[in-house]
Length: 273
Ligand code: ADP
Image (cartoon, rainbow, N blue to C red; front, side, top):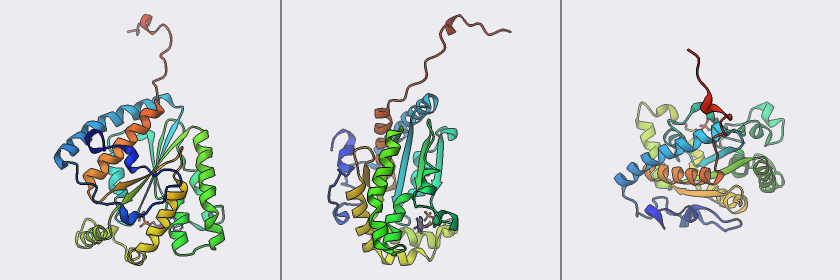
């Protein structure tokens, strides 16, 4: 690890890299100090704001952020913490739920493509087209031949988006099974969080190992140069926010959005009374 316990390459899955999630510590490696990291994340937040302002003003490229996690994995919390305070006109969040009949009557990418960010925008997917090789695979909602073909279809789709000016960054927020239990118990017992609790999450928890296997295949097959997957140790929320913010900043810096050049002759303009 380099600067302040962080090198994005440590969390990025290389194309084709076999992944064993049981070997990723959801706690992180313990090298970060909580208070210092929280303070640093605040500073980074300003930097993220500046970069988003430039992306929005430039209006030439877009950023798509894909968030996937097990239930209670922190997708909502990440969105609230990391993207708070950005220019809301430039951020569009799309949650992907169980497909509607109209969505099911189309190919699986139909609903997704409609929600990809326009130029100048940051699009955030809270769940995504990856559900079509996760929940769909685990529950065999379509024949194996159909979901098996989707890894290549997703890669081709993302490649097309990337060639059209959309940068893609994908986060798998990795929590441990024990951490999920704690969070679900908290939800169950907190009046402000009970609304988030769904008994339908329990059968999903029972299939934990099947989901891990499905995630491992996603990570191995769909982490590409133009649309990498990052596995974020997500048991500790402050650490998760720090990692995600750092990677977003790194990505946006690489995109290098610039404010448009001002009209020539502005120095001679006088605003009339
Ligand atoms: P969340 O858990 O994301 O906060 P919900 O509790 O409404 O929101 O859950 C959304 C549900 O929609 C999840 O169970 C997810 O697996 C399911 N879902 C999303 N996309 C698909 C899909 N393509 N096919 C089947 N189920 C899906």
